[in-house]
Length: 106
Image: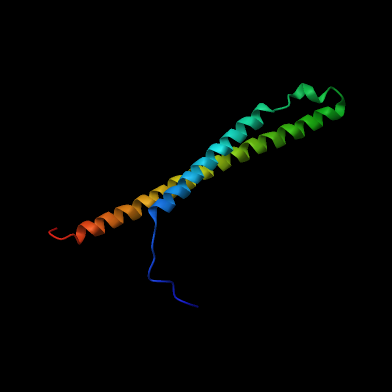
């Protein structure tokens, strides 16, 4: 097993770009959820035959599960964006503090 490199370089701008991409994905999940919601098939569209009741019930269950999954996807992407932004800020803050600590005349 090799030891990890001692020269770890963090690029806050790359982390910020990744966070922005995650925020974009969250927005896409929200948009997809709205479009999916707009395409909802109402109960009466399944008809009145006895089998239509169970079909409509299964559809409603699956439809709600999809809506929930899309909402959770948006939340996860937003959480990732927030965590990555916090990480980038922490690295930037550490770099600034280190620079200030060793600045001439400090």
